[in-house]
Amino acid sequence: MRVFVTGASGWIGSAVVSELLGAGHEVVGLARSEESATAVRSAGAAVQRGSLDDLDSLRAGAEHADGVVHLGFKHDFSDMAGAARTERAAIELFGDVLAGSDRPLLFASGVAGLTPGRVLTERDANPSSGPDAPRGGGENLALSFAERGVRSVSLRFAPTVHGQGDHGFTSVIVAAAHAAGVSGYIGDGSNRWPAVHRSDAARLVRLALEQAPAGGVVHAVAEEGIPTREIAAAIGEHLALPVESVAPDAAAERFGWIARFFGTDMPTSSALTRERFGWTPTGPTLLEDIAAGAYA
Ligand SMILES: NC(=O)c1ccc[n+]([C@@H]2O[C@H](COP(=O)([O-])OP(=O)(O)OC[C@H]3O[C@@H](n4cnc5c(N)ncnc54)[C@H](OP(=O)(O)O)[C@@H]3O)[C@@H](O)[C@H]2O)c1
Image (cartoon, rainbow, N blue to C red; front, side, top):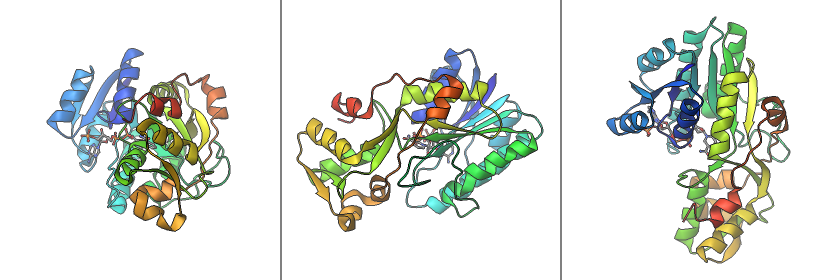
């Protein structure tokens, strides 16, 4: 399959590019800078220069592909409304280009906050739609393309897709521990975070590209839920820092924008995903990665 990948130079995208190439697919990666283009080329993929804001570049990449894996995202937490607008426009564009072709459109989503306080499954619909919803309501919009002849598939990633070199959520929590000189968790830290190793997530993206039905929801989740106090304890142990509870009303000051995620209980099952794709995660757990120095 010739696959157009946005976010091909990113944390998850670069692993997905290697996984797809390793399985014999051809990859064209979107790159917005010469640096990103060089990274994509060195991985062995072709490059489509452009950006998420340049819909013509997305169209050019998608039109000539057998499928799209959309992993690019503007992680500017000071302008989430702008990121959501860009995401929705990109999803709409891909829907228009792929309509009536039955070609796959896999797109990144997340599990954070969908059903806080109980185990989220693949059968749970995203409660939010519309342009003002998180990520521009892109998940429900893209899944609706199944009715227009697009094999759209949601990739719901755990909030921490971890591993050596990760610059995502866990690294932000580690940075907060460094800054405070103490590793914190919020309240009693019993709220749970799911996790997946990057290599397992990349393999699952390939399996979903090859096999998932239209309108499918895939959970890239290896560990259903790790109490956040255990995550804080592992960070404290590795950095030789004390571990403490942070009161919920002081969490924003200690953790910044990530407080609202780190304080959320979001256990997530991947039982249906494992069964459908024969996917068995084999990578290290989050606590093993922290202990091994992945966030040192
Ligand atoms: N990592 C996680 O733990 C996690 C968890 C849940 C959901 N997700 C979602 O999964 C997807 C991939 O995440 P990630 O961790 O791989 O993100 P990442 O490492 O931050 O990579 C983002 C990618 O998007 C590209 N990008 C950003 N702005 C762009 C723009 N304006 N035009 C073109 N490309 C642009 C980046 O290109 P450059 O290399 O040029 O910057 C990079 O390739 C995202 O949608 C993310 O929200 C990730």
